[in-house]
Image (cartoon, rainbow, N blue to C red; front, side, top):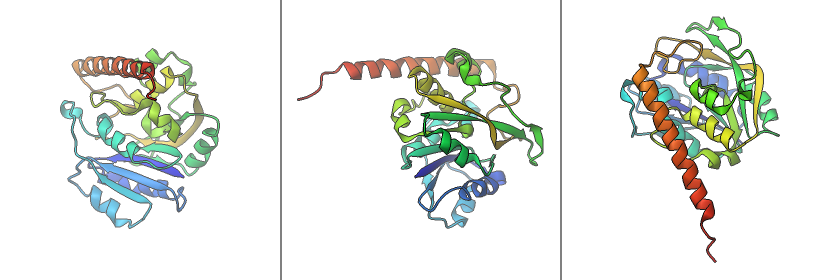
Length: 254
């Protein structure tokens, strides 16, 4: 069984095209879990219009905010909510405004037979679907040290898929962590999970004026924000591993 986890927030403009590109690759027993962060536009109406039993809509209440960057990419709780409800053996992550290529699930599913987590390449397109960059990664980025990837994130959630068994290694995602995909990548890397890179563009990553993540362009976030989220991230990472170490040292109850 395959679970696709999508987080939405006021994404009516491109949402239908994205959902269509996903549903055509799912079987009757698979699921598309959509966790909505309180959309006020037509997002919920679009989702409900499908009447597809494979779609599970979750109404999420935002509990953490990072100034004006709190929605979408920076709302880790929304993605965490979707992941926690996934029932599939294989879990794919999805943004609300991209478009999957028709071989995405097939290619990543085959790689997950021997890997814990997969990251694919992607094409960058504009709001009209015109190609800006046919491939984002020019070389395998996973070969770099994890701290280099932390400084310049390469774990884009929209290009990631992992085994259900991998989820327990990085969950729960701390609410103080602004970037859920950086967290999944860093923890998986540090826990020595088998991570593979697929050098095929499996999605069209759409650039438009409302993007909150900054693939293919320089981040517009202020310096103070970037410093703050990295400090919070490192503190959460240290606490996460210390808690895990303490748990492993606890004697088993007879």
